[in-house]
Image 1 (cartoon, helix red, strand yellow):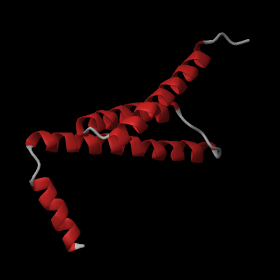
Image 2 (tube, one colour):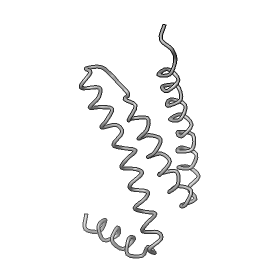
Image 3 (cartoon, one colour):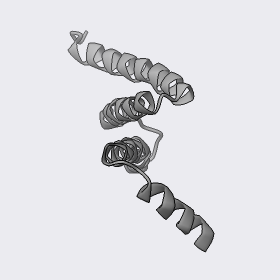
Image 4 (tube, helix red, strand yellow):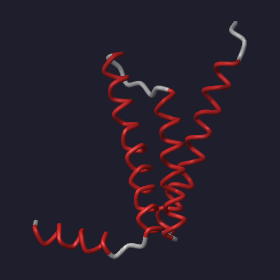
Length: 106
């Protein structure tokens, strides 16, 4: 465990200020992206049924875009592909939700 912490400390100490900012951006995006599941879990527990609240899709989109920007900065094709494709899914779900909400009711 001590070796792992020493390795992490050495890694962070070797980063430039710009890289430290991008590391923070990456962790911010990942935290937001992860916390969407907590929102979904709480909403589902309250309804006693599986439920995806609107906030889940917005957090997915915003967190995904932040992680995507970090991936582009890092030039990581795996994360760029994953987050890039995910962005279209989140946008499409938001479009469907908003279209349903603006449709006249029969």
